[in-house]
Length: 246
Length: 56
Image (cartoon, rainbow over all chains, first blue to last red; front, top):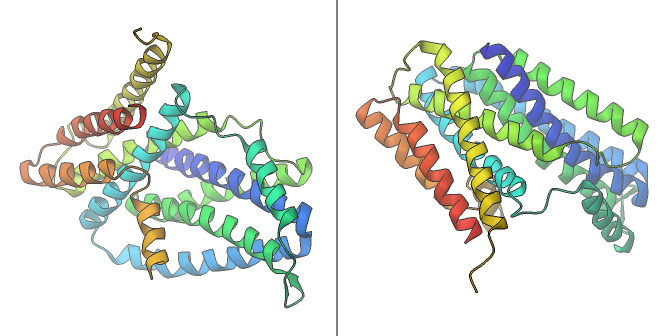
């Protein structure tokens, strides 16, 4: 069961980040030319590969309890950030992340930026794509490496991420438009729930606590985080429709 | 250097430092008590606090 959760978490987190990266790359490619944009994608992919190659083997050398404590803590912080934003969006306190609006803004900015050629590339298009892919990819790399090493199954986490990258890239090539129909907030909510669940589970184990029922307790933690989040959404929605006192 | 530090602060801590501080305190308490129930309760409290700060 943990393997299914691991694969699903890596896939969902990677898909969300790749949809955001695709929006930026499309805006750069359509306005500044595909050569500069795709070179930026390639350079960012190489930079990410270097980060993964350096960090991956290093993580396997860290004692498992220390790793679970640090990774659990970081996943909890990340998970709470994702969950907080997703709950605020679902509760009506934050605008739903709109890829079309972001795409339009990136297009506007890319169209009005000056032209600066370096090494035969449009520098704005190159750096826009590079930053988009590298920064979104860094979070994916972190999730894959930490999930994989803590669960002692990096290949499975990497497979989930690779599946998402290929899927989003293929859809992006065919659509040539931002993937605005993706239920982004639902995906982010699911990722937030999963990151928080794994964070609670590994963080407690790393800190020396034992779960009743062993590994099966993760399903209880998952149910707890899910119900808690749904309750918070319900509270925010009710609070929003109650008229303010005169 | 400042931009580098800023990047890591944004990457790890994010929009609300309360979540990061709450998680660190809860992990320390879990290590102290060796109790599994500390983190779930702490997550409920931290999430409530950070949501309340966002909507007030």
